[in-house]
Amino acid sequence: MARCEVCGNDYDKTFEVAREGSTHVFDSFECAIHALAPACEHCGCKVIGHGVESDGRMFCCAHCAEQAGVGGLRDRTG
Ligand SMILES: [Zn+2]
Ligand SMILES: [Zn+2]
Image (tube, rainbow, N blue to C red):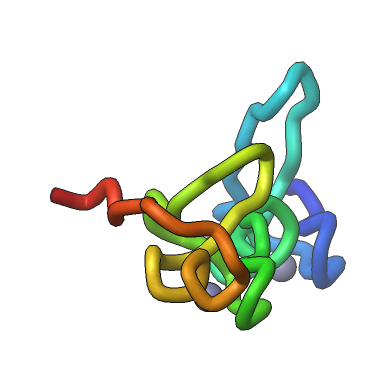
């Protein structure tokens, strides 16, 4: 049994996510997203898909990047 590091839930179906040399334990994808997903710099929503990145700044979509003054980006989904 492991304990989710986000909500503290004791759960027998936790899973581990290894990232940048450390291992995190979660009971749900919701908790994993809460802990690991970057937030869009413009609208603040969690970037769960590919998102768009420019100069180390992370956005959920090209529209948000544009609104934040980062032009010339395209969604990487296509
Ligand atoms: Zn949790
Ligand atoms: Zn956004």
